[in-house]
Length: 344
Image (cartoon, rainbow, N blue to C red; front, side, top):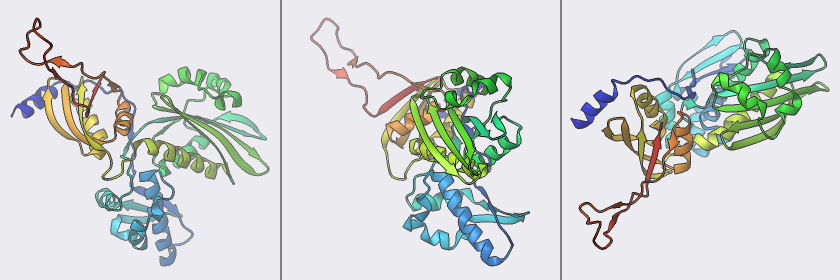
């Protein structure tokens, strides 16, 4: 009863979230290009759709080849709720619950639908000139499709004159984000992606850099056309980010998590973020929540950073109750070593 009453008091506060992380829409829907609607091609497209979904949910391009998934690849329809054709695409809707259960039983790490928002500073350079890809442009739609295919929440800058002047090849390939940091503030993203893409001899190549907090990633890719290049970059970004957030079944350790400064909106968002860790709410006191979770401390810290949580210092040892300060030193109550404390 005390827990229910405390949750009722918590629900009275409806402050907004300070975080940018988003749940990816249509995460379990995959579109595969097809030439015809012949059964053989349809069956091949269903297998490709499953492979795409597995990579989207794990970030691992080799995860679909796991021996434990062989039976699912032979019969993907056991995971599919519906499929149909739209033009030259086969649109496949996988059942989220059935799919997640099957993948967890196969032992592959899974990345939850709540993912960091990426702001992409993408410069296209060709014989016609250089242009920063902005929101609403045709090239922007292409990047959006690639991000959706890889399960990434993507935002693009407005690409106004000031931003066009800022996004030079030198800036985008710099080891530090520099002026991009301030220019990105108004877009409310968790991750900065800088891409210098250029066309030469009929092929596209890109240098890309990724910044998320103190984490730095980079790479170089080549593709036959701009669409293939966009998909390759998004696949690489997904792989690097998933290594921080994907959770393998049975891994981690039993941890107690304390979160200070919660309200109803934050509680709802926190519940979604902690779902992959088997979180159980065990205590509520005012705006303080305590959970029991099974996770690695590093992955838990990365996940909680998405909602703007900051880690609190460990509790200082406290004197035993009733101890006389004038007497000899009393035994101390040592803080739990499996407790992680965070606050908004």
